[in-house]
Every structure is written in C-alpha cells, then in structure tokens.
Image (cartoon, rainbow, N blue to C red):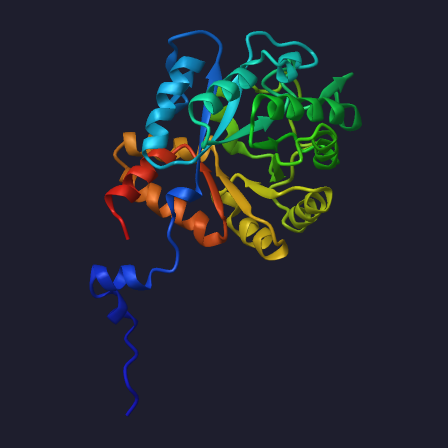
Amino acid sequence: MSMLKRPRRLRHTEALRNLVQENRVNISDLVFPMFIVHGEGIKREIPALPGQYHYSVDQMLEELKEVVALGISSVLFFGIPQEKDEYGSEAYDMQGIVQRAVRAAKKQFPKLLVITDVCLCQYTSHGHCGIVKKEEVLNDETLDVLANIALSHAMAGADVVAPSDMMDGRVERIRVVLDRNKFNHVSILSYSVKYASAFYGPFRDAAGSAPQFGDRRSYQMSPANVREAIKEALLDVEEGADMLMVKPALAYLDVIRAVKEATNIPVAAYQVSGEYSMIKLAVREGLLDEEKAMLETLTSIKRAGADIILTYFAKDMAAWIRRNPQ
C-alpha cells in the first residue's frame, strides 16, 4: 500500500511555513528611488506615482532620516533640472541638482549608499537619452557626455553610478574615465537590460523625460528578446560593470533568472513606475490588498534571482519586515 504524499504538512502552521520558506526579501536588498528638484521647502506629491514625491534638497534630507531609520541603506537619485537644452548641460554641471543632492546626502548620512542615475533624457530639450542630430540618437558622440556625468557624480561623492541610457560601449568609457581620475572605488550598476517598455509612463511624467519625437526603440530592447538580454549583460560584464540591472521587473522575471544564471556578478531588478502605480491604483479601486500585492510582487522578483530590488515600495516593505521579523 503506497503512502499518501502530504506536502501540506509543511504548510500546517505559520512557524512551519516560515521555517521552510525558500525566498525572503531583506531590507538590505532594497533601494529607494527619489526625485530631486531645485528650490527649498518642496515636498510635492507626484500624481502619476501615488505616495512618491519631488523633493528639494532640504526636504530630501528630512526624508532620508526616515529612510535610514527604517534600515534602508541605499537610495537612487534622479534629478529634475532647472533648465533643459539640446545637450543636457545640467547633467554634468557640478552645481547641478544631482550633484548638490549627493553632496548634501553624503555630508549628513556618510554611511548611506548613494546611487545616481546617469542619463540625459530628463536634461535634454528633446527628451532622448543621447546626443541628437537630425532626429537620430548618436551613440559614440554620447559616450563622452555620459562619462562626464558619471565623473561629476563621483566627484560629488556618489558611491555607485548607474548608466541607464543603453548606448553601446558606455560602461567601458565610464570605467576608463573614473579610473583615470582616481575614482576606481566607485562602482558601476549598469542598466544592462532595459526594455522599450510601456511601464515607464508614470516615471516620464515624474521626470519630465518623455521624448519629443519618435520613441526609444532604436536603443532600448525589444520586449520579445531574451537572448539579446544575455548578450547585453555579458558585454557589460566584459566592459567592467560591477552590477547589472534588468528593467522592468515584473514583466521580465524570466529575464532576471536568465541573466542571473549567465553571469557571476550581482543582479538588480527595477520594479518600475508603471508596475508600482498599477498596484496603487488597483488598491484605490478596492481591487487589491496593497500589503499582500507588495509582498507577492517583491518576493517574485527575489525568487526570480534578483540580489537587489529597486522599488518605490522600499519604505513600506522595510516597515513590514521590521513588524514581521523572521
């Protein structure tokens, strides 16, 4: 007589379920993205990103007190410039908004890991991620500009620079410029696998970075491709990336797993604005339980293989973990 198999035995009590749980999101996994603007006394909610704000530097410091108190050790800064031009000049200005934010954050919170977005889209009048000529985004002409942005962030005190532009060869150019200027300790978190996704809409509203013509499919990846993702990831490893990112996360869990298995450096995944806002708006309509949806989606990203999770839920998740130690 065969014995009935009973997997349910390990689900019988909460203590048993916790004991055999395979994947857990830790506070140390989380990176909190923040949008920094010029001015003073500004903490302005972003309509497309419920619960997220534009912060002036002084208000950013107040928010960081709460972030640090929750145990979150890493933040990602996006800057909103005062003025835009064809070349995105403020992106590499030492008095630019990101550079000011980094200096202030590192002065008050020296142990906080500060990651900076390295791109041109929110700084340029045309809204593209590179130098444009006759409505064409020029790859090689953009590389030195990106390297100068990364260098300015490193000079301000950034611990990690994160190029999100998807230009070919930018990781190597940034690494060379950082090392030449004695910033060999500054890490590169490369947006290696960034898809031309529909889920960026709320971010583009928050950052004012929508392209003024065309789209970004000539440099961001097709959502249909995964072998190409591996190629991009391996090229960035070869060029000197210290960490890799897959973006978005939830629609690309298989890609996170594939990149994790193909490489031997930490893999990050970004639960992007559209993925976050879908949950928030569904909660607003009474269709989802916010806490359960947050836990399930972030756990799925961890389960897929992400070592690092960038999410607008970082504070809420950290608070939940502190309330539910395991």
